[in-house]
Length: 135
Image (cartoon, rainbow, N blue to C red; front, top):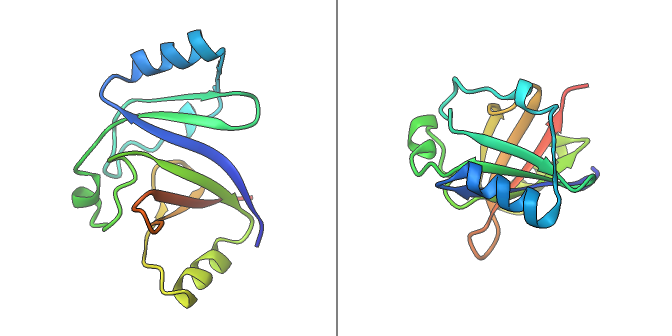
C-alpha cells in the first residue's frame, strides 16, 4: 500500500476570493482537469476551485456543515477541510484502519468520478481523506 500526499482541501464561505488570493499572492495555477470530474448530485453541489503548485493540488471548496447529514456519514470532509492522500490500494487502507480500530466513513465513489474515497479523523479531529483512482 503506497500513500502519496495529493491535495489539501480548504473550506471557505467565499471560494472566488480564496482562489484569487492563492493565485495572486502565491502564483498557484488552475488545475483544469478536475472540474469535468466533479459529481454534484450526491450530496454536495458547492463551488470548488482546483489549483496547484505543479505537484500538490489545493481544492478550495464551499464550506457545507450538512454534508454528513445528507450523505448519512459520520465524517464531514467539508466542514473544516481535510488533507488527502492518494493510494494504490484502498482495500489495504480500509483493512489497516479496521485492524487499528480507527472508524472511517466510506464515501465510495462520491464527489469525483472514478475516485473511491474514505474519510477519518486523526487524534486531534483533523479530517484525512484517502482515495484511489480507477485505472
